[in-house]
Structure formats: C-alpha cells, structure tokens
Amino acid sequence: MGQNSTASLQTWAQVAPTLVAIAAGRAAADRVIRGGKVVNVHTREVLDWEVAIAAGRFAYVGPDATHCIGADTEVINANGSYVIPGLCDGHMHIESGMLTPAEFAAAVIPHGTTTMFTDPHEIANVMGLEGVRLMHDEALMQPVNIFTQMPSCAPSAPGLETTGYAISAEDVEEAMAWPGIIGLGEMMNFPGVVAGDAQMLAEIAATQNAGKTVGGHYASPDLGPAFHAYAAGGPADDHEGTGEADAIARTRQGMRAMMRLGSAWYDVESQITAITEKGMDPRNFILCTDDCHSGTLVNDGHMNRVVRHAIDCGCDPLIALQMATINTATHFGLERELGSIAPGRRADVILTSDLTTLPIDHVIARGVDVAKDGKITVDCPHLDWPGHARQTVNMGPDKTAQDFEIAAPDGANHVTARVIGVVENQAPTQALSADLPVQDGLVEAQGEVCQIALVERHKATGGVTNAFVSGFGYSGDMAIASTVAHDSHHMIVVGTDRAHMAKAANRLADVGGGVTVWKDGKEIGLVELPIAGLMSDSPAAEVAAKAQGIVEAMVACGCTLNNAYMQHSLLALVVIPELRISDLGLVDVRTFDTVPLFEDVR
Image (cartoon, rainbow, N blue to C red; front, side, top):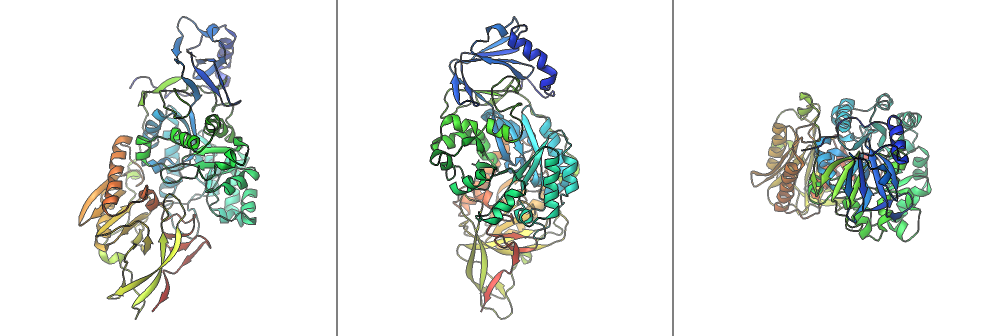
C-alpha cells in the first residue's frame, strides 16, 4: 500500500533540537506545505501560512517556510486548499463498528480521523482485562493515534446483570500504567457514584492519581441533587445529553459536554443551540460519534460527518472544527501534543477544498501520507489474536422453540405485560404495557409487540430470559439474533416466532458470534463476528456489505426504523432508561431494580 508509519513516533524531547533548527533556518524540513490556507484552531483564524514538517511533527508554522526548504525537502502545493488539523473523536467504541482496531482505523483514516479516544468496555465484558489489553496493543500498532480508556463498569450495573468478566478497581489501577491508556472509560454506574460506591470512587481516584481523565455517562433527565452528586464524583465529561439543558448543565459544572452523532444517536442538533443561540463558550464542547456502524463508516464518514452535521445545524465552521480537534486534545491533556497545526505537535493534517462540506482530499498523520482522494495509502497492522478470543459463544445446548415460551400464570386468559418500547434515533427506551392473550397456557405476542429473549452465552448456564418489545414493526415469521448486546454482550434474540428464534440463536453459536436474520424458515442475513462475538478482522467494506444485508433483511421483516440494528444491540443496556432486559430479568432503569414481566393477570 505504499508508505507505512508503524514505527513509534519520537517524543518532542527527542526531536526538539531538530525542530528548533528547522524553524530557525539552520536545517531543512522533511516536507513543506505551501499555497494553502491554514486553519488556526487556537485563534479561529484562517491564515495564508505555510507549514514545515520533520520527524512526524510540525517544526514551523508561519507566513513563509522558504528558510525550511532544502535540497531533499518535499514541497506539497496545497493549491488553495484549507489546511486543517486531523480530526479527533472524543468518545467512541471501536467494537460498535464490528471491526478490530486495525480495520476500524483503515475505515476512518480516509475520512480524516487521525485521533481516537476509545473505550473498549464491550470486549471487557466478554474477555475482561485481557480483552482490553489486546485492543490497547493493536491500537498502538496503527499509523494514527488511538488512545485507550480503561473500562470502568463491567458489569455496567452490578447486581442487575452478569457479565463474562468483571473489572475491579485493582484492574483499573494496573491499566493506568499501560502506555496507551489515556484515562477511565465512561462511568456508566452513575447511581453507584451518586451513592458513594467504594469501588466506583476507587476507580476514579486511581485515574486521577495517575493524572488522567475520567469519562462520564449520566443517562438520566434528573438535573437535581443526583446530577450534582455525580459531578462531584469526578467525571470530566458526558456524552449522554440529549437536549440544550443537558449541555448547559454539564458545562456549568466544569464538565465537557460531548455531543454525539453516531449511526443511531442524533444528539448534536438538540444541544448545539447552547452555543449557537445561548452563546455558551464553545471551548467546553466536544464532538464525538460514540457508536458507529460499519456501514456508516464506509458510506457516510466518521468525524467529518459529525463536523458537517454541526455546521448544517448552524454552527460556525471554525467552531465546529475546534470541537473536533483542539477542544478534544485539551480535554485529555494533549494540547501540546496534537489537535492543532502548531510547532511541536504531531503532524496530523487534512487538505480540504471547502470548510463547510469538508471533502477530505489528502490526509497526513505523523507527517506521513495516510490517505488521498478517499483511499488509504498505508497499512494498518493486525494483532495475532489468540484462539480463545474466537471461541466466546458458550450458550450450552442448542436452543429449541420451548426455550422461548412464556408461561402464563395458572388460570390466566389475558395478561398485562411490561413491554420495552424502542424509540427511533435515541438510546433511551420507553416502559410500555400491553394486553396480551393466553393460548394453551402460553402468553402470545401480537400486533406491534413481539418477543425478546436474552440468551446467556458466557458460561454455558443455558439461561434464557424472555420478555416483550415493540417498535420494530416486524411481521410474519421471523427472528433476529445478535451477540452484540451492550454491555453484557450475551445474545439478544427478537422475533415473532419461537422456532425462528431458536434457529437464529443456534446459528450464532455455530459461527462464533455475529448477527443473523431469519424469515420464513431461511436465513436472509448474516454478519460473522468471530472475535469475542463482537468484531471481525475482515476489511471494513466486506463487513459493511454484510451489515447492509442485515439492514435489508430487517426491512424485509417489516422494520423501517433508522439504524434499527443499533437499537436492537442496546436492548440489554441496563444503565439507560427506561426498561431493559438482562440475564436476571426485566430491569426498570428509572429505579434500578428488576420488575415482574406481568403487571396484571385476569
């Protein structure tokens, strides 16, 4: 593929004499970019300046780099393009792309993403600290900057779910010494923090003692004392806001408001008015993706998509760029290292012909060309994943239709059941109720309501939790199963027919994990995710094509929701209101307690 930048980047201290000499005109740069308009995100200016690069870093940024050019210097003519910093994603989960770190990097580099702050809490729930280390190690091999946040909550809500592994405060303390760890992943157990839970506070303390950043996750509309208690607990940011009031509340407490645009989360437009209308200081706001489907990455973009969307929502392009570059770097204590085009920083640069539509014409990372005209030009090295990482679907004996039966209470003809209500383009669900009939002693789903089951897949207990869900619009005989089931990552099966549900579950056990859709007795969509049941090490385009097949299969089953698979994968996320499913039963996230499936029997 051409140039490769897998060698370790030298520190500023190691190359400072060279950078100083080039800036002073005593030595020549490796590369100089001329003829462009440099976007200075420190001052929100566009300057007719030139840029000199050496040893993977910026040496000179100023009006004339002639004195930096020697016989062997490569001069890049920007031809009037804007020269902007490489884009940073402030909060994301690589596993949500169904890709390994290497393949995720290969997918987003052509879109101008040169820095990612990733929380691998998905694999932590399946493989524990070993899984986090594997993600961390492959991240460090990439030609762009991938920093890892040590997951804080596995399980996300102790006592309400059972995971494959649990993360301890000692694990967090150990990981803080790893070279690629930048901080603590999102603190999802916000009730634990509010209640002063010793383990949660110990994890936060270990992170702060290491001088690193604590990620937040306050998924509650309550902005009263509970929110203030959470802020006092130490989280430095939060990406769970869904409205203007959320963004304002967080920044007023000294937190950064992270506004996300993922494949299914559209929370930028509703919060950016805090800047565009209320005039809040934009340096306290950060753009991120959180969860991006592989199809989104391949077809629509990554952080460039988020920046464009923010601009479309009325944000000044230079402010939008700040929120995807320097704001993010500053938040993680890396302002002197990346996030801007300034001396000493990593030479992460994009050339684009327009600041509003943001076409990504040329991407440079650490001084090396990594993408041109939408095509990657470097290799993204793969880790040699151990065999047991591909053998994580352990659900016990094959399932039958009987495993998905929901027995009615003795003598009942009808029941009123609790139902998980899916909300399009939002992470929260609704806690609904439905009157359902009883036939031959079994409660039957009908109309908009279909069955949902959580199949235990970590320890082969054979356990199946059955309940009801609505909002997908499924009809006919069908089922969809996935081993991506945030955050416990058991297996989630949704269907209108119990035999199809059994077929779907067994299929994923056979292939080692992934997503499968069945209709009228046949499999009509499959994505194999053999690594931890979460990721594939196949190229992103191949995974995206299969993922698109899942979308089309869901439509064939009657579903018309935008990115409905993302909604499916979150149905077991017991830290986001209102109603979820776990291996321990139905969870009312408003009260953080399990609740009975039936509200009334008659």
